[in-house]
Image (cartoon, rainbow, N blue to C red):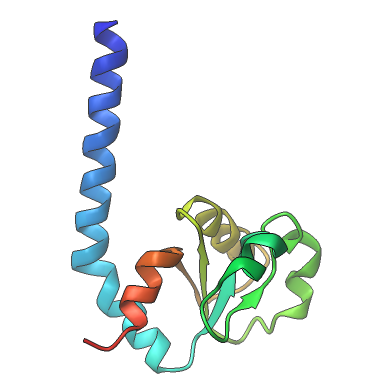
Length: 119
């Protein structure tokens, strides 16, 4: 029981650290990429996309991206996002494996929308 509790605590600390790092370091880079015209790639399912998405986002789900990446221009800049940030990491990595040079993980939809909203 103590081990499980310790593991949960360590996981929570790692996640919290990631969020702080992301806010402090990655936000400005993503904001500049958006301003430069990066394309937003929603890697959630079609059903999730239909329920709500970032305006202008292209929907290619993680489940279909291995086939559909050919629809994308490898010379353009992409920012991936999903509901929690896990699928977007996988999609960004897969695109890099396919030769895309300018791919950034936007993480969770909620976080990316905050970056895109003028303050």
